[in-house]
Length: 419
Ligand SMILES: [Zn+2]
Image (cartoon, rainbow, N blue to C red; front, top):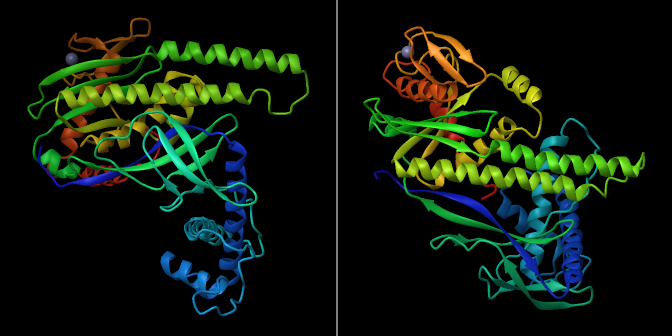
């Protein structure tokens, strides 16, 4: 494969177990106190607002720490000895929160601080013996600093990934360690270059049936190389329905008492179900594309009103609704695998025939088969996927006005969420 190198950052989420979870809570609390201190200090010193982050941190340290010369700082940090890397991580979180407060709050003067509860980030010096099965963290036990060994459970880190500063996230039930991992991508050629090189394209159509999506891969001569239905939609819907029934039952038994707590685990379960399926499907799609050396993945772009209507009509726990998340995951997974996912305007992809370009004259809603004016029969979603592939190719041919728009869409790549 050709092309220059790029990189992507993905967050690995590992389950963490330790002997003193309460110490992690104390650490988090302390972290947020320091975060708040620097948040306010930054807001009070307006002359620092336009500096870059590194300069801001430096200036705030001058204001709050005695330093080597033992001078008296103007606004001393009220807690004696805090490990410098702990303090810096918390201060950076406070600065970031204050910056977003400033950018949001410009129109509402006097609006005061929100709750600061950023997860504690552990910079170098605050952890050691770090692998995908364990980490030893320096934590605050309420009185002093202790090294605490923690076990980790989850996926192995990628071999060539660069591990960045982890953070401890206290969820309702579990303690998680979030670890950003930086990986280089194989190929970061732009969409334009890929199209000019005649790379293979995979067009995708999402459905509300058993297939979450249907893919059709074509080469530069418009030969179809492969077709795939990515299934599991019914199964997903069924799982969701079971959980929703439990929620309904539980709500009934609680009567009008709404504390919000008791059903939280079910709602989390639903969320995890969605994530699980979206990861599985997007992974499958990437694999399919890798096997056929795809350079560009085309997903349909609908106008906002139409999307809202379709999503509304099919409900929050339908396969088509999950397509929002699948697209999101697909975008960064594609990038990591050296492909680019772009949105291609969906206009016309269901009304014409993917084989001859003729008009589609009928659709059998039961069998999902569509028939064109020249008698071609095809699954209507596959037909749409085929058209999308063609449309994607033709839009990048010289002289097409739509070209620039697609290029723009492809730039919103290299995401930083999920795995
Ligand atoms: Zn036809």
